[in-house]
Length: 374
Ligand code: NAD
Image (cartoon, rainbow, N blue to C red; front, side, top):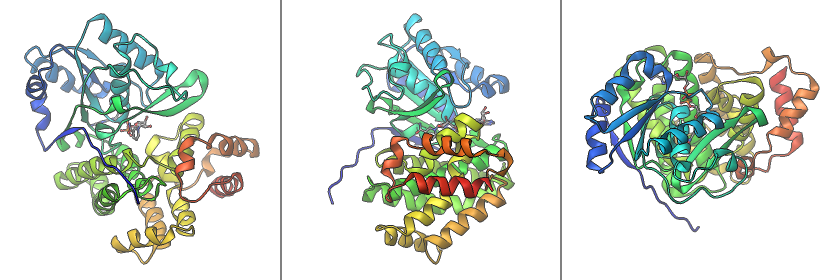
């Protein structure tokens, strides 16, 4: 088996670490930066505190970021960076704020629109601004990935853009920032972590370093996610979920995600199912499918290492976890018509589907969506 591993992000982890953002930026010799923050942190006052305590290192604040960030928000952020001749970006928020900032920093020096790169496969410009990523959900792992997921409602498009230039220079992971995440977001983002771990592990591009990270991350999710959800101020559970999110990000960024993520894009685009919940919706279905494939024994071994009898038993465990966290396990409430199911099948053919270890056919997708719709 041939493989390569690379991870260029410097990681700072620990409660209170976000208070060191100004120092970290100065150590990197960055000057005149923009804080790109989720609007929640403008309201909470944290964004202003970070700018004010940066001793002039951060000179502006941009908070026009929606969940599933839009291409036009990325372009507006890039325009601001260009017009003010800023030198770096601090990204504060969940995956949405981080991806918006990464994408804007990626195009800021070129004057182009991110639309040129969305779903086109065109390589991003080599010259880009550095990003310090500060995640506030656990999470997407975006702080250590070379991926930014951007939407363009006008085109009905939500797609990941992959670029070496999207790796942040630094990740500052402060579990204390996640204490305010409401239970429904904790549940959805937490199940996304499990998807990253499992999909990174079973991806056709899997490799040993990422496998080890995936296993550790999945163990942490099964053990600590219920507690982080039930008791948002549990410091240990929050810290362990941040650790899981980070490791799962490292576990999938090289192998890439697979079928559950491919299916999540139309579920979010068309029916506004939040990202993590949309990925988790099909995770147990694909666990069963992949367990029956040629590589099934790897998945059984993974499940056994987590204390399950086999992968099918783990699929039951995933289903039980979703029920416990009040996450969706069906699409019943959407009252899907046949035509809508047909459209979901067609729109699930995102390139990530090709990374799935078992080839996924239209018939399989039809069967899965029809079962979920019942
Ligand atoms: P999010 O960033 O969209 O945030 C969800 C909600 O939680 C928002 O309303 C936000 O205001 C709120 N929130 C965030 N942090 C909070 C906090 N500390 N306290 C209170 N509220 C808080 O959610 P997400 O799941 O982190 O990110 C989803 C996005 O990330 C999607 O677009 C998804 O496709 C993308 N994604 C990217 C990668 C990657 O590698 N780049 C990986 C997975 C997902």
